[in-house]
Amino acid sequence: MASPMFPLVEDVIGRILTFCPDFATLHAVVLASKQFHAVYQTHPKSITQAVAYNIVGPALPAALRVLRYPSRDINEDSSDPLTVTSVCVEESSASIITWDEKMQLVKNAEEIAVLEDIYSIKFKSRHSRTSVLTPEESHRFQRAAYRAELFSAIFPADTWSVDDIDELDSVAISNIQEQRAALLNVYDTRELLELFSFVRFMRAILKGIVAAERHIDILLTAGPTRILEAWEDDIGWDSSNADTPNRLFDGYYARAFAKHKDILNPPTEDDGGSAARWLLSDVPEVNDTCSHCLTRGGLELLTEANWHLHPISQRSLGRLKSRLTNNSTLFDPVNKAVAVAGTTAVRLVDVDFTPRGPSLFIFWGGWISAVFDFAQTAGQSEFASWTKDQSYCVPCLGRFLDENVWRWLLAERVKEGWVPPEDCWYGYNCRTQVHKYTHATTKNHLAVPTRGDE
Ligand SMILES: [Zn+2]
Ligand SMILES: [Zn+2]
Image 1: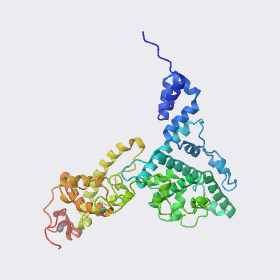
Image 2: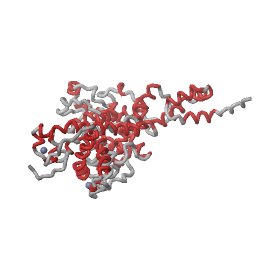
Image 3: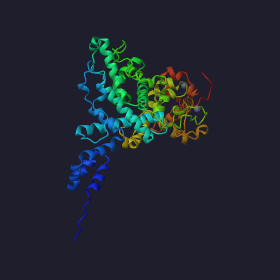
Image 4: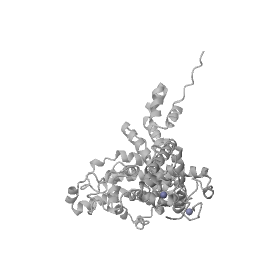
């Protein structure tokens, strides 16, 4: 006879439910057992809150405020500036989390985790494509990210037409600027500096996309998750209206921060690295040197984890030696070899990224790894000790590529079945390969010159 199961006491079941890693698991567990279902029904708020915490982490109150803030109900040009600070404040106590909120919490958490990965590789460690921020640093980063998302949700740019802005008088403009400053009022100095540091990070991303300061201010209004889209893809930015002064959005964050005396002397605009000290406790790699020439490069040094972020990774053709760069018959072969190597790298990277959401790190840089793999086996003594896990300054990585990309291309073409014609005497230095198609195709120029210059 089967022995009766011990009835689990209610608080043990409740405790088990709070360990569910996500809402789908919680849902499945609750549906699978009447007993679990009954316990869940008794404590729905606290159990759901605990699972939300497992997904979002300690920034949960800030994450919920983003979803719940009734931004559409605040009339920007007429309400009391202080209203924005008191509406729907960050709450730590448990509350009912709706189905829509759960979906949005998960989506935002995934996107902010990706932003944290980018932040980590740029400001914390160049050796990892997933965040290596400590739990405290991660909390500060994520809380600041949600607060920036809230700022953008309350003060968006896309609800304003140019004509609407023209109609605003100076009192209305100043009222909105007061509201923006007031929204920051509730944070203590330390938290304000963390947000300030996060805004610097958003600016650093945007500076790679648009040059003009005024454009950056407008794009900042899009908020962190949409700025992430800009990083991953093209933002489709129409700058036609952005060159004229915009009274409503110039100094979007700067004016709000300027009202807080503790941030009167912030680090300079371009100093994303030093602003990072408000979010990070420690940056151990900041004094690292190039593995080959000992130049100090810190987080700017290139290694396999981060060289896809550098423009050097996008110039495969430009890294061919000497006049090969202008040999048009090599364009297709080099693009094909780079694409094959890049695609292989994407597959590998995707496997690594599965736990943290979608991969950003596609295509670019994969071919550099392939050139390193080739150089390791090609037996060129000068580069035998150069491995992709070492750190390189830009000149050293450039020198490595200049000496190895053309050899790698030759090997890739031969692997694909290409039978090289006779070597041209002048090899990669040949001038004729640049302007004479027949010569370029009937002689092999992926070769060391055996005679001097033509
Ligand atoms: Zn170097
Ligand atoms: Zn030639």
